[in-house]
Length: 152
Image: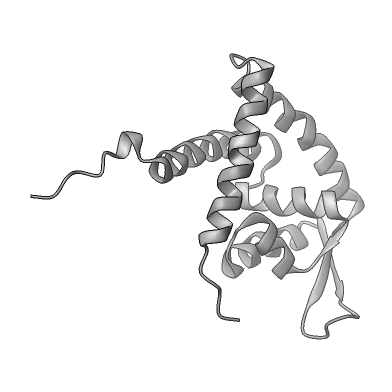
């Protein structure tokens, strides 16, 4: 018989569980307050920060697959929260940007997101938050080094 993995101390598993829990809690809030899914929020957030992005760039930034990005973008365009325009640099792609309505939604969601983060980290000392951010940066860099190249 082989040794058990020990999921409670296996970092990739714990990261996945914590990520899913945090996403589920915040998704419920975003759905109730703003009628958007977590994938839609991620699109709005990265476009809100960047100004204009291709769907491919959104996928790369959020680590969402092409279909998830597409399913998130479509209702945002229909609700006139996102605008789509031709990409002069790549005729096969387009650029997405927030409309005025989308920018107002982004401005409304940011304080809610910050409040959620503050509640979640309320029991952490500032040094613990800094150490957590450093650890996350290092884990992300380590995972990126191990990532298999994608077929394009």
